[in-house]
Image (cartoon, rainbow, N blue to C red):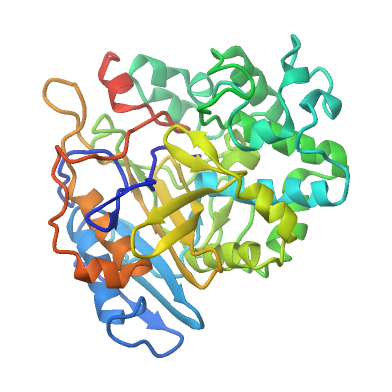
Length: 443
C-alpha cells in the first residue's frame, strides 16, 4: 500500500522531496553501519554509478536513523547495488542488496499492466463502466458511473478500506495490527469496507483521491475477464514476461528467501518499533501484496517503458496523468519532474514496517529503486499539530538525487530545505493516517 507520499512532483534544492517534515530519530539497532556494494559494469566518477558517492549517500540514510536499506541503480548498461545498516536490530545481521522486500503499492503498477494487456486483447474497455464486467459489485448506480479508467487513476471517488479493516487505527491505537496479523480476508470484504467508507468525491471528479479499494476491484476485474486468479495471471503474464526471478505474491505469512525484518514505529506509538515482517498479506491483495527486490523493480519498469509488456498505445494511456492528492498520477504509475534531469516514472509503496520507491527515466535507461525497513519513524510535535523534521527524509532525498540526477545534485549550492520550506503534503495512504488526522486522535 502507499502509506505516505514518498516522491513529490516538485524538487527542492534539486533533490526529491520525499516526505513532510518529521522528527529526528536516533538509531536504536546494534552493530556498525555496513554498505556492501557491487557494480556489474565500470562506473566513472561523477556519473549516476559512482560507487563511492552512492555508497556514501546510502550510508548517510542509515546514519540518519534508518535501520537498514538496500538499493539498485542503473544508467544505461551500467548497474550498481548496495546496502547499509541492519536487517535485524537484535542480532546486528547486516542488510544485503539482494534482499526480498514487501513493496506495497508498487503492486499497483503490476496490476495496471495486466489490465492494459486485457485492454489490448479487447476484453476490457478503459472507459466502460465497471458494472459492465462486475454487475452488482458497486451498487446504487455507482457501478454504472465508475469506469475502469477511474479505478486505475483513483478518480472513482470510492473510499479506502484499510482503516476500516484495522479499526483500532481510527481510535489512535495500533492493536489491530497485532490482532489481525494472521487474518485471511477476502477481496470482496475489502471492497465492501471501501464502499461503506465515505465517498471521496463524485466519479471522475478532479482532483482524484488515492484509494486501495480501486485496485482490489481491478483484481476482481482481472479474475472475471481472464477466468484466472489475478495473482496467477500477473505472475505469468507480467512478472514472467519481464524476466523477474525474485518477484512474487506471498504464499505464506513469512517471507521466503533473504529478507530483512520490517519494523513499524507508528509515530512512536509502538516503542520500540515492532517487527511486522511475518504478516498475512491478504489484506493487500492486488493493491499491495507483491514481494520483490530493488533490482527486479528496475527490470520491471524498464520492461514496461521499453514496450516489452504492453504496446505504445497502451503505455500512452498509462502515462495520461490527472491530479491525485498532489501527484501526477496515470494508470498505476505517476510522474516526477526533476529540473535538469527531466521526467521520471514509477511508484512508491509501503506496508507495516517496509517502504519502497522505484523511479525510471522514460526510456528506462536511468533508474533507481530503494527499500527500507523502518516505517513511520517520525515524531509528533509537542502540541500535536504535525511532525518534527527528520534527518532520514533529507538523507533519502539526497540519495535519490545522487542516484537519478547526479550532475544536478553535485552542482546544487542550495542547502537542504528547512522545516519551513515547501514540503510534500502528507495524505492518507493505505495503513497510515495523515499528521493532522493522527494528531486529532486519542493516544
